Length: 361
Ligand SMILES: [Zn+2]
Image (cartoon, rainbow, N blue to C red):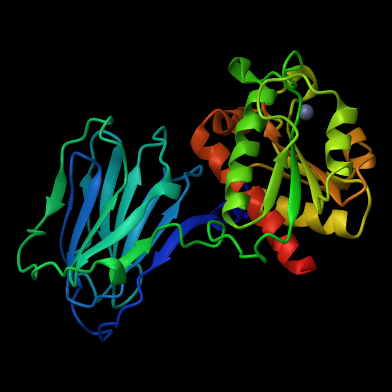
């Protein structure tokens, strides 16, 4: 593994959140007073009052498993590592730099988490809670100190410190003018045509249908009118897909596919987005490609390309065809078989679309 690739992988800090409260002076001792990770997957923290916390999540790479960490002001006296159990590999307390404390929870490589659903909740001025994993993973609680101690009486209103862990640059979807835009999403294949068949029999038609439905939901929540060319497992020929788009007032057309390599080579992975007409089509393709890459660390960027696919060639509005990974590739297929990753890809596509729509206004 080259140094370059390692650095590239490290760029993908997938999720982070900020809790903007006042900061302690740099010289102070650690603001982390006590913590416990319970057997139901809930992490509870006790800090000094009005502490400024920052929490992060990073997907597993070749070196580490999935990691969740929280940075606290104030310097930790004695860095330490605590062996984990169940889904937890280990918990580390360290000082990433002078005057800081970092609590790192590293998961085992095979653990599958869904950080999109994570929420850090401030229970009061000095207590925090976040649910990290499902109780279906057997786990014996680990912690230090008493989290409950000294906790002030819980305020009746919690909304001031209720923070969505989703406050991250790919989860935060841009706003566009409500009820202004209309989008056609085309889940590739369907019915008798399963599309690509990947590792373990995973079918392209199923994967792209689920992704497309999530994209529709996300865009609808932003006030964008969305039409799917197919809503279930039906065999839909290419011309009707084009007619659906051309007979509507759609601003854009996005066809969603997954790839297969010739000879089903397991080491071929990657993402690519095609456009037929340049200009706006290319801009849309670039936005989508950028965001799907960010949620697929380690999977190669096969680029934004000119393509002559029927559905993007014959639609009259800006149109793209996105290939969200190789179902025959070990890395991509392992991800695409999970709903959690399909959600991430859908978020990324929705984000690319919304960025494009807000740009063309
Ligand atoms: Zn396809």
